[in-house]
Image (cartoon, rainbow, N blue to C red):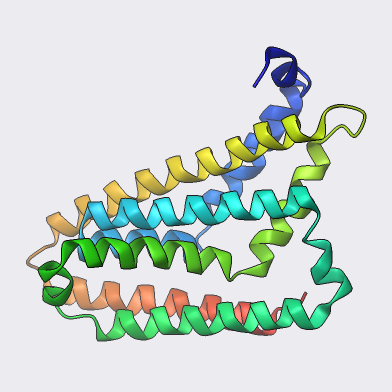
Length: 214
């Protein structure tokens, strides 16, 4: 990435871009709920792997938006609906798994490698199967792209900021959730209430995705 590429995006535009992303990453949603719940119930390591999965998915969305593939959702509404319903179904699955999770997650603890892989896979799938995440990238990024300049470099810069800032927020959420989980480790009612809360978040997110349309 050359210095020319960096300065081709004006500082005020970069600050506005970061501010917009910060507002989005601070809003509660399925991505945040996934990192918080995974870290709280399976430990910070699994929470960080879930965050890594989300970062991978966001990188895919940035790439797809740069390639213009998001336009397929406009041209083919049925494709948008298919992905949307798959995403809603996956969020409902996460809600169900959260409700059925054991008090100590012993099954996950027996196979740390498997638990880590499941956490990362959940991060990828939660975001990847949300077509609105792709549309968000497709609508936001062009607002800060100057068409008369090198498009690839600008997408690389803005995409890196989008993914990196999201990962930073998710890492903070993961450690915060793990810290709170340790503090209330012996409080059964708090743990049960947390399970209901997170499963409710996944359920509401699934409902919004299913009925939200395009």
